[in-house]
Image 1 (tube, rainbow, N blue to C red):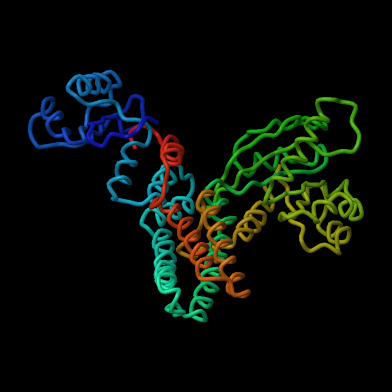
Image 2: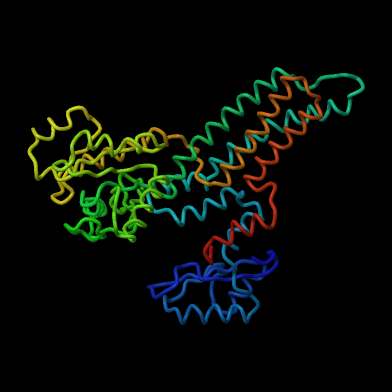
Length: 419
């Protein structure tokens, strides 16, 4: 993105490209009213509704440019709102998240951030730090008189509380990232256990090829579905078996393990008729040690009786029994998936879903931890002030009070044109 000139007038199509009933063209800048009035009579407009014809829309944009405007760059309207202090940087980023939201929860999280919930938390932290930093800086001006304006016990208590608060915010990132991007959920298991049938049942369409021939799935297949406002990114994988002479299938199995390592949830599908309790234990032992939620799926219950299942797996209480082919027990799996991301965890108004915010909070927390360590060993006020200023800098960077052109370009270039 080129350097923004706020005195220039910009224009862009604000509605999606393509044929529709209407389109909206946005114009922004000092000459907006004057330029638009050369095309349209009546009220002074900043947005011009037009027919949905792509030809008409492009002709209007062409005339606007000829009259003195220029085409807007991606995210330039939102960037101007930020530069004009109509919203801070975290709120500006939330605009893109609102546009990109695919579920109720991701929309709700982005809207709360856009309204300033997260910004208020950060501003509150920063204000408390600035007050103490000012007192310590004042002490440095009177260093020869050995006075103490900033109470060290009060400073210690403040920093400890802030460290706990920042830790609480960063702890929400895992949930926030899952809400924003969908929970990565891998379907794994041996060949012909019914993994692809389960994917089709969950997304409610024939997305994956289903065959009685073992090893049909050679590559990963990804689809998304939503349960109770929460998006799950479902990944069907090649069947896991120890030995195969098929080199392509071997590559698929390696990809399966790669996806498992990246997953938050693994649905391990096994055939209740073919698999013994001991075999299931052996197959899932390694998965149970990973940092993920493992849900064993006993598939094909339509081929066995209930008493046989209970006797065979009497020692396991974590298995979901179903038949993905006959749609038996799917409600039990959906209920279990809803429990994974407990909605009690996301009742907090402030949830971190942006990696930049998360990293900024980590750095601010590290600086505050350094303040506590400096106080514990009696370091000078000058060193305390330095670490406090570092924490203030990282908090300011999150909301855009401190920013660079490169940072702004990186953020706003990901926006769509017209926003």
